[in-house]
Image 1 (spheres, helix red, strand yellow):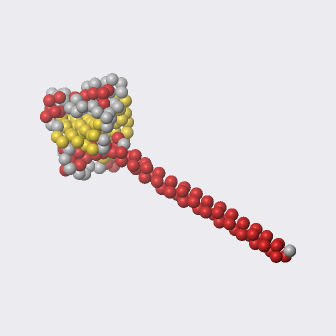
Image 2: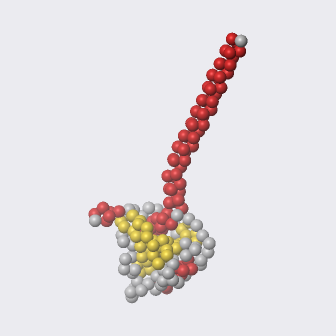
Image 3: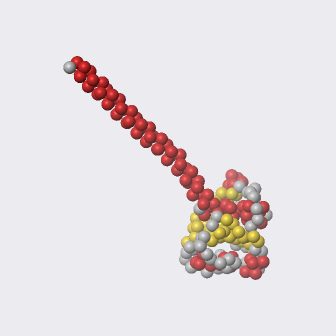
Length: 196
């Protein structure tokens, strides 16, 4: 009888010990899972930034900086994707640049305009890859379509290098002549931002 009681006590201790170990394993697994999720979320935000409109605008800014030697402070960058292309094509400022390339799925463009709209640059993308750039300056108060097509160049590896400008991008929206909202970024030079 004593052996039976002793055996029950050992089984009870063994059972409690096993339950405690299993519970500890579940808690450890939960904590590891929570830690892994917390660490992966900032990376997901960075990945979204690497593939969203801002990433394309930053790439386009490098290209524009390498093709136009000037300060991009106070320029406006307008992002046009394949869903907003047709509305932007009808716009008086954007349309002359977008007519250069056909609308197709995955195609987008980033257009830069000086505050006076006398200088404009357009960079074209297929997916995340920039493939063409053009620019134009207003000669008689208006940018001419012939100047846009004459300045078109394919994007080279040299154009993708850092242009040496520290730029800040503040998101906003612009409205096309047809009433379509487009994502835009007001550009400020980091140097100028620190001075002001």
